[in-house]
Amino acid sequence: MPKVSDLAVTPDGNSLISICSNREIWIRDFRKGTERVIPEEHSITSLSLSRDGKFMIVNLNSEEIHLWSVYTASNTPHRYRGHKQGKYVIRSCFGGSDCLFLASGSEDSKIYIWQRHDEAPIQILSGHSLTVNCVSWNPSKPHMLASASDDRTIRIWMATRNADKVFLCCSN
Image (cartoon, rainbow, N blue to C red; front, side):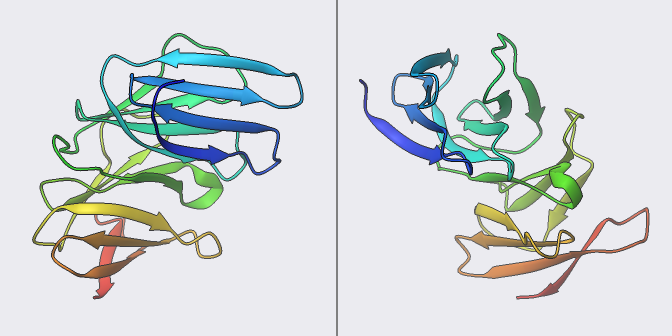
């Protein structure tokens, strides 16, 4: 097995997902005793599971995020583009009501928000001055998102009801 750079266990404990240095995602199903390997064209830098464990997103150093089903084999991922990632590990996550959104940090100091089924971001948040390394949705308050940056700040973002501006920064 190649070097593993990130991994996750599904919430039900039935599968282990690992991302490997050779551009592969390995999914081990403990119940069935099977293993599935998903090849990627570019280096994978991070992995995040949906809360129900049915989907995963992986960040690639090609400035794409790919969404894959954990349990259903597919040759084509759902792709998300717009954020900047070249030399740093950037972490993305599922979130919002029913995990219908994805969020990602970016090397351009912004946070990108996508609806789960749309390739282009629906919102780009500004407020950091350096690379945003990771983001995390609050599971009990689905309209709250936290971001951490190389500028040494953690910002909390809250959704608003104004259709023109989905998020506002409310604290540092």
